[in-house]
Image (cartoon, rainbow, N blue to C red; front, side, top):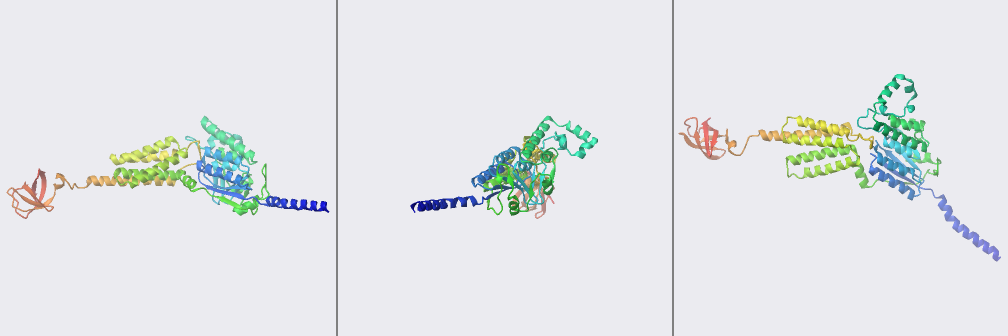
Length: 459
């Protein structure tokens, strides 16, 4: 009897301790969701690295990164890729929403992810590194064996491309070869279409979501987050187990206010606008010292613009050209060159803006034509407005000193023979006639002024 009671206690104790274990085992892991839209920069690298850490801390079933990017900095891109590759949690790159893209640096990040999903109406590709003096992606292709078969069959095209390839510089060849090898290694590691990945670098190939799935560049198309989690459920991840995402709790993490602000500032178009606002503020302050507000706004805008340019590894030659253009605008206000300095300033600013991000450190960054045109146009309008004020001030009649009396009209208060008194602008003046006698009450005009005596003639 005692033995039976002892066994019963053991079984009850085991059941009590086993119940929490089953509860823990049956608990579904959450999914951590992150969203980033914009340029790949140190800010985005910081945010996405934090998201990987958050997913690992939460022991999440997966980390879903919703991405929409035109490209960005090579160093920041590689930092993100290293973090993704080392993640213990499966990383799903979701190109979304509809109309979004994973271009340039975004392609590399996609190739490094465990799963690539795309929303309908999105695209991926165009990852060719651009350099100053590059004649385009076709002329910088070092892997001719990965070109389209129909292009390989056409001898004329082969000859043309061969002659173009011979014109590329060793640095261009080195950069493209490095990027090609890097994206190929990432694609092969994740079992993706390495041939297409290399063509995205060498030929700037870009494809929509449907074709990306057919070519095994992307894994699936999902309309929204719930659709994505349903389609991910049951997918086996090499070294990371089977995904259990259907109906999982979604933990969303948004960038902090600081990250959002810095991400907005570190955009080439925003940087260009800030520089234009800064220049306009400085111009106004130089013309009208003491207004204070334009100077403060201009200085702050300039500082933010140069922070952005530094963060985005802007080309130094481009920055110097833009600085020269601004100096020429200022010189136009101080020196009347009849528009020559203004024309030189416009040319300098435009050339500098076009050269700003044509470096190997940036992938896919550029200033849009509309932003460039509006920024230069705004600077031109401010310069012309200040010039108009200056010209009008110089042409305005003098209202003080002896010069202000020349041509002034008045009335003779006494008879002139030849001296007398005149009333001009409410003041009595001693005057001498230069046109003979003048009767009292006759209108007179000032010819000149000798000391405090006016020389007048009868009107």
